[in-house]
Amino acid sequence: MQTEIMNVPSKAGQKAGAYEIFGAFARYAVFPVHTRFDAIEWFVVDSEREDPVCGGMAIIRQEPTRELAMAGLEVTCHA
Image (cartoon, rainbow, N blue to C red):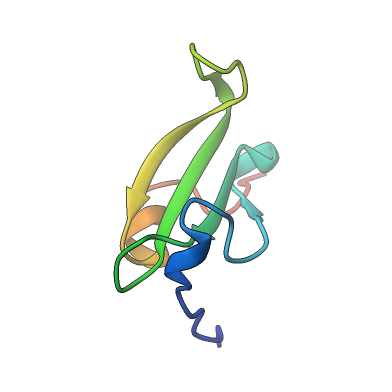
């Protein structure tokens, strides 16, 4: 069971919790981010895609819940 993460608008844009790595070969990471609104947003980054602007891992999803952010992505490694 995951603890609810409280949004702190004064920290908008900062991570609100730790990265959770998932997917085959640890391809994806999901993490919460504080917003200037009522709730946090969940982001997913892909280690196999590069952001063309900053050169880091590309953000591929932004959703209001962890479940929506991870939906349809491979969660476990299949041997």
